Structures are given as C-alpha cells and as structure tokens.
Amino acid sequence: MTEWYFVWVEGLRGPMPQKWSSEGLWGQIGRQDVIVRFALSDAEAHLPLDELARRHPIPDER
Image 1 (tube, rainbow, N blue to C red):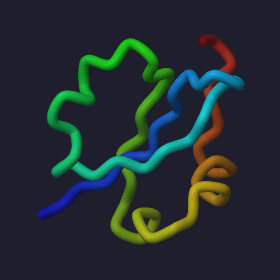
Image 2 (image 1 turned 180 degrees about the horizontal axis):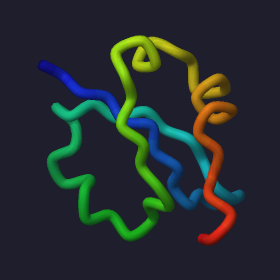
Image 3 (image 1 turned 90 degrees about the vertical axis):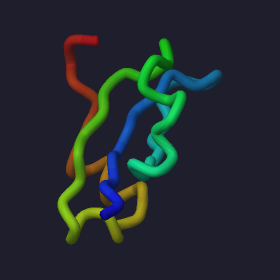
Image 4 (image 1 turned 30 degrees about the horizontal axis):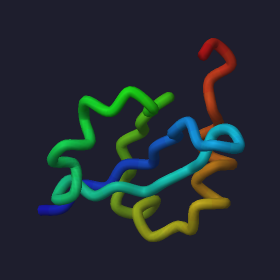
C-alpha cells in the first residue's frame, strides 16, 4: 500500500511544498533540505498542494 507525505523543503526562493509517496522515498529520507514531513491520511492524499499547505503549515521553530 502506498503511503503519502506532505513535505516542506527549502527551495531557492524559500520553503516549497511537495507531496511524496512511500514508493518514491528511496534516497529522500536523508535530504538536508527537508524542513518537516507530515504523513497524510487516505483522504488528504488526494488534496492539492495549496490545501495541504493550509492544513499543514511550516512550524514556527525552524
């Protein structure tokens, strides 16, 4: 079963939201640019990035 994650990473212009699947996590776990990763429920996995960003904002203490 594929699990989904909503991830904030440091981009060139600031934090950028991304959605990762458990199938694509190989090699991603150790990335130094990951700010935070949230596990998504089945219902959230189908939401667009802008809605996920509203639901899972970047923590204040980065």
